[in-house]
Amino acid sequence: MSSPPLGYAGAQTPRFLSRPEFSTSAAEEAIGFARACGCELDPWQELWLEVALGELDGRWAATEVGGIVPRQNGKGEVLVARELAGLFLFEEKLITHSAHEFKTAREAFLRLLGYLQRPGNEWMLERVASIHRAHGEEGIELHNGNRLNFLARTTGSGRGFTGDCVVLDEAYALTDAHMAAIISTLSARSVTGNPQIWYTSSAPLETSTVLHRLRRRGRAGEPQFAYLEWSVESADEPDAVAKANPALGIRISADFVETERGALSTEAFERERLGIAPDVSDSNAIPLELWRAALQPTPPGDPLCFALDCTPDRGWSSIAAADSRVVELVDHRRATGWVYARCLELWERWHCRFVVDGAGPAGSLGAELERRGVTIEYLGTKDVARACNQFHDDIVEARCTVLDPFNACTPAVVSAVKKPSGDTWRWGRNTDGDVSPLMAITLARWGATPPNKPVPLGAWR
Image 1 (cartoon, rainbow, N blue to C red):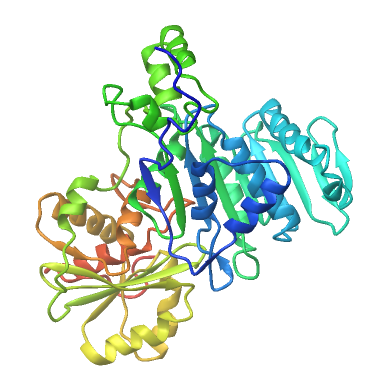
Image 2 (image 1 turned 180 degrees about the vertical axis):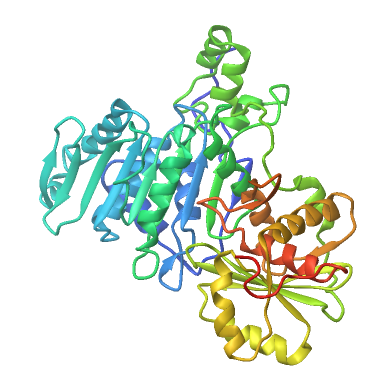
């Protein structure tokens, strides 16, 4: 096979693309700044920035950005453009770039430093106060205090990986310990700041639990998650290499691809060059094909039960309703302050059951709701587990349908796992996903299905 003529032989649009809605975008500024620095981007790289840097009400429309593309295509230049823009244009006080190994983090540092020290870029260097080159402490600091640090995730912990923008390169090596620490440090910036997390990687390994989960979320189109993935379903697809490699004909020659095909195992070639991830057992709470079959546009009739849930960090809350056949996500918004008035409005109109997981994050909202006149019934731990099992079976066996006007339930299903609870299980909340919509519709379904009876207040303790 001979190399194609110089040009874009690879697909400039990814196989999977999730683009959060936005009103304005900072992508044009970032692309223009990168060009002024000598970093010319391909169309697919510009698309990545366009999808990632959309803004809504003065904040990033995407709080998380995921990009999966085979190696050597040029994701490093996308990160250079994002980090330079954050440092010089967006006034982000701290940007953290991390990789799974010291050498990978250092290579990213040297790549960006090469643009700073490029002849003709003295105008940028004039704004640089110091460049830290010590091993493990690589970074750049501007005179205004803005910093860009390059770190390695070598200890199994993500503590210290914080900032206004956090780049998690080589995300196939991310662990749940990393994510738990990183998400918790960023939560303090979520109200007054404007944080953004980037996940970049080649296709996940079999052991890449976090990246498999991120990929499921991205493919499901989770709100506030910008996602791009270059890959193919099968190596037998026509033009498989071109579909999975946007830089084919620019940075990757067809001849070298054939060399890789002969040198690597079939599994390694498919993963590294075609983006085909190994099969893993799907830990999703509900098989997605059955879940999608349950989605329908018909609302329930008169509700028999409402239910409330929120995330452990109280960043999102959900209210659901159910009749004997249909469950509906009635409301889904940030924080918890709006919940009281909305629940009271629903209670005064319908006067039907209102259930909450007494031991869950929303349990503490019950006292204030009761003070305002809403009668709350608290589910115990065993009943919550039974509710999750029942709802799972109801979806799998097509006994109920779901109305999801906020498009929040499917991402919740993708993010949820089955968490052991005694000798059974319940929905588990991942550190990087909002499962409250799923829990709310689950509890509403339970409360609307006789003869399920929540326990009295206090009995769940």
